[in-house]
Length: 192
Image (tube, rainbow, N blue to C red):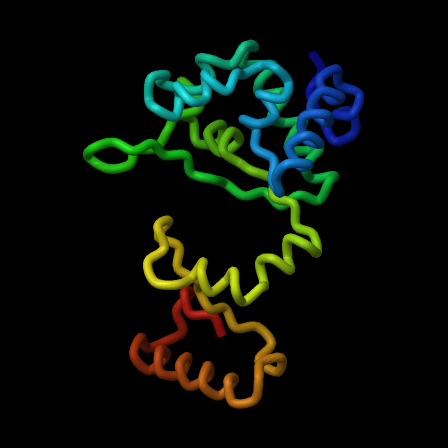
């Protein structure tokens, strides 16, 4: 097999199947995941994914119906195709519940970091409709209120204080100056 590059990935034999699976996933959801692509290509069954999520299968590669070289090739082509579609990559953490807490699910037998990230990387469609939904105050208020189950806390990064409403830039600068006085010199986690 030839090495997959940006110049030749569209000529690969798996490319049409990947495009079909990606299109089907984007029709129903705003993102594409490698698991959905493998299911769309017929290389992975939903019952197998459910068994893996419940912890009955030690790692996902065990139930994928292709060899590991083919799976890695598909992941690479998927990443390049998603880049061409201008989909934003987002690493997602897969965990399963256990009495003692949540434990991460494993995709590969080796558990190698880069391979695990490749399997867990979702590609998110960022369009006007998606952006409008994300910026809608009614959806943001419910997403950021109180205790978020995921533990996500929004962080305030201030860029272009001239775009802020009058008076708000003064409050932000006061807050940042207060942090500078408390923590001393400029810290990397403080964005100015």
